[in-house]
Length: 246
Ligand code: NAP
Image (cartoon, rainbow, N blue to C red; front, side):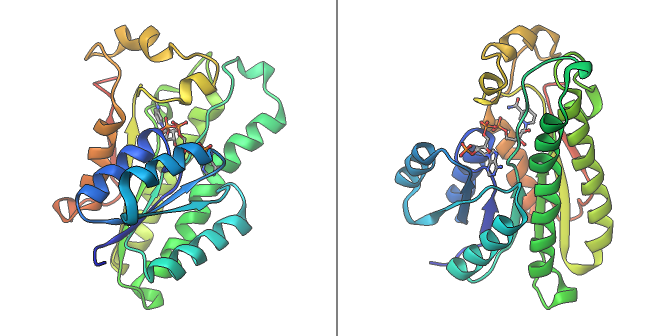
């Protein structure tokens, strides 16, 4: 089977799964990473068939990331795109109630993971290392510029780091065939809000969105797929807000 190959971290649910579906529709083969929810991953595989392969790995762990890339390259032979989508929030509270464990966990998943996944992708894709180039899209958040006061400032700060990672790496590898961009979703209807303790968060905050609604995962996926495509061939280091004006 021909076609470009993408790795989507956290591709089994939400924004990641919507991205996987759109990539497959465009003829990509997709390595779908997930951490633990076998049922969601298996359902996506059942829906999309041989265009996708599942790779269980915790992308907050260096050894797991190295093995993930080895497994993906062994299965597909090469890699054209990385979507650093896996991310977590934490229970909503004020900063004075944070534990060090909570902040460390957030930074490990949302910052260390994307940086190390970028490292593995650059080692494979960069023309400096004999690669054929490629594209990276990091999934940041509007939280990086809003700050998430009273909810999760540490999460917002982790996404600020993702923005800076995107700007710096884009410049570092721009002459080596790799484009690096980010999307910054606003309030999107996925499970992440229930996981952080408020299933109705999007509905509560929708009136504060200039478009007066939350977004759908497919609306973020469309931006990601555009940033991976030749249609965005002169974009690198771009932070694309997909947030209904918020
Ligand atoms: P979601 O529905 O909760 O899905 C998260 C996905 O990430 C799942 O596939 C999950 O796998 C995976 N994952 C979590 N931790 C992982 C780890 N350590 N290793 C590997 N996979 C891991 O989340 P979402 O709302 O689609 O969010 C996707 C991205 O968008 C995140 O980076 C998030 O910060 C960002 N974002 C979301 C919103 C929003 O409103 N939804 C807004 C701004 C930004 P398992 O199911 O196996 O755990």
